[in-house]
Image (cartoon, rainbow over all chains, first blue to last red):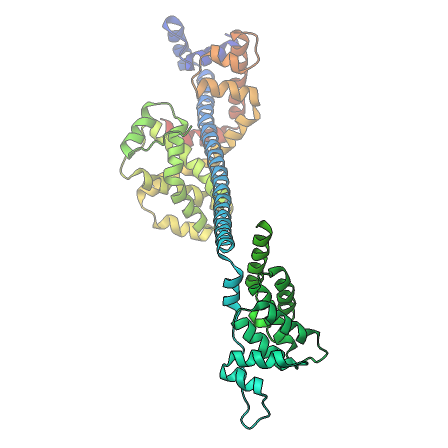
Length: 253
Length: 205
């Protein structure tokens, strides 16, 4: 039997393909031929090595499959997290927008010149200097004698800024905004700077009372932008917004 | 589609490995159940993630071979057995790297007889690794044919569909040549063949 034929027979034997006489003959051959026995052992070892190699490859493949499952799972988790985050941000943004719209709608519906005027108006408090040089009009104002203040003011041909200012205050308090506008405008136009910043604020309030928010906002803006203005702290962004809403409302009428 | 995750008791796992072909599901179960536990040991003892991965893979292969050969005595739980395999595989690797000769010697002295039994099994891992290298040198076609035939037990008709051969006879001739090549490599290094055989003795016969 040549070497190739022997090897072929050994492989058939190991693969379980020999039977009957062939099997018997081979078993006898390997019993008497040490070389055949040795080759059979090595081929058998080679087959076992292949089986071990196959198992190792399968374990590696399963691990690799597992890793890609974990990775795709992780990608899905990351995507889900991003979507959830975007959804949360959008939900918060939508909620904020809704709240802003609701507040805007409420303010738009409820804002009115008189309401805004009431929120912003504070009567001017004048004091009489004890033993000082107070005019009759000033004394009447401090005493709350509004009619006297007006009567005295209207008699004056050239009222000074203080008289005009106090008269303007009274006109505002008795809801005569047009006359108040006249009194405060006189102060602003005068070359004397006394009561000028007070007059600007109360003139703006007079415009509000007279339902002229477009004129009021120009003055309020000037006060808002001027941090040194006496009435700067009384005008904030929210107030300007409300005046703008009033203007909008007036336009839509 | 989400696949069902299988869980096994020790008894079920041993029975499955003994009686059925090794499935990817069983291997994945072993990874899920024991990888983090065993890799912690490697990482606590100078190993890195890759070391833990390599050693675990080796441990799984050895464990399955032992079960298949009916050599698992069942004296301990699978977890304990895998831990011991893992420990000795890693100590063996450290020994190879010549890092821990002193500590390793001390460790061996502290271990009990059953551990030493396993350590003997692991001792020939280098020989096993060298033989696996021989198979790699056979080339991809030979590996595909031999693994399909001797590991997956596929009939020639099915193997023919995996490789580009005219007919079954040509495929048979190729299989013969591939196996003969490997046998010649083993014959050329009888010392290695003997060590490899020793490595298989525990697991196979």
